[in-house]
Image 1 (cartoon, helix red, strand yellow):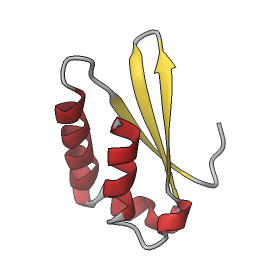
Image 2 (spheres, rainbow, N blue to C red):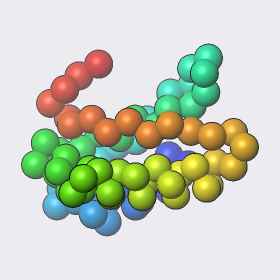
Image 3 (cartoon, rainbow, N blue to C red):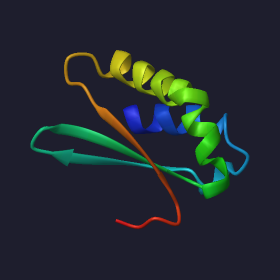
Length: 80
């Protein structure tokens, strides 16, 4: 549910919504939502001074509740 909600929010901000994907990784320390966007949209997702990224993280943490989730923004050119 968190991944779908975050993907919907990010798609509304970027110029290339088809390049947006959100992957939910389960690690020992908890859940990480990995957001991949087009390199041209990375600045829009992060925002001036990181304000947009902070807002996304705030919304996700409010939706996650006690479980918590971290959000990591990655451009589509960078592979892990």
